[in-house]
Image (tube, rainbow, N blue to C red):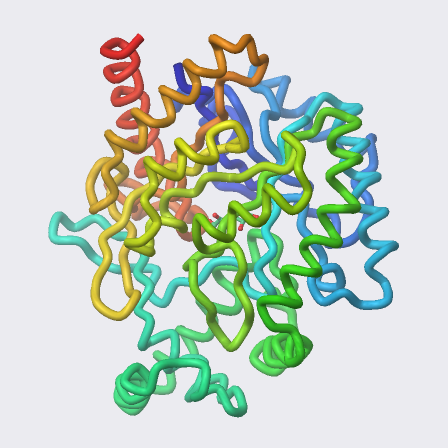
Length: 400
Ligand code: DNO
């Protein structure tokens, strides 16, 4: 019932393709992580990775991500060249038979967490996003000019208090986690080799000084108008990833947060190719995002699923939870997914099975002696995948 996939970060990933075969996924989700953002993905490079995957009895199901360069998000004078490169990469991927492509439109920072080692009562570890701590990083560690105005004043007060109690070691670790550790292995523009990462980060943010949500929407519209006709023509399904967390940080605009945002996106350039990565863990941070209802509404545009769970706390903070724990009702979510799949199957759609990956996982058992990427431990994700598969089988048996 589920098209089970697994994120693989390429040759540097401590979880190998051989391991992935045994966890039970059949599809791989990966990217050409070695190609700098903005450059064309050549067929020869795509085929190298594709063959490697297929040699392990797996298929390259989804590209996550084909990164959108900052120049496109900022509408610099270079954006037409960058969009044209993007289209060439899409055509090349399609020529190699890889037709589901994830991207996001978050300025500067992809996802954000403030604690990568948050301990749960059973001894497992997860990731935490504490909003006041994030604000402390922004205003008192990064010291972004005029940042106070971007956050509610009671949170700024809390942030001040948090910052005053942090040792310099703790603040350095927080900055490292946010700027480098959670970004570098994905598509981050700042890595461990960048000279003065905080300064580099601030200058990236500064480029958005005059870009608000309306302007960023316009820039996304321009990008979609350029790429969707090409995706259409070569049978590629584009899927935008929601903002994580789904509210503005660092004074930067974020435009993929709510049902209203998603509605705007799919309507602004109408096409089945203009689709969504339905990420329950990103969208679910907001209690006003009603996930099963959103799956129902956006069903035919959902080309990829990230399933994970979370527990919300005060002030927009949350921690990630086991896939069937936490406060998102995974049973209802899964029921909506299976219902959508059955609807597609009845319609005779070739893509009736939506690729799904267990997004993130808790660190459990021997994950503690491994060195997997933050959020991507082997055993925790394997457990998540098994739980999701069991849930899907049970639901399918009951409603088919
Ligand atoms: C984090 C991921 C994101 C995601 C990108 C998609 O674990 O969910 O980095 O891959 O935002 O473009």
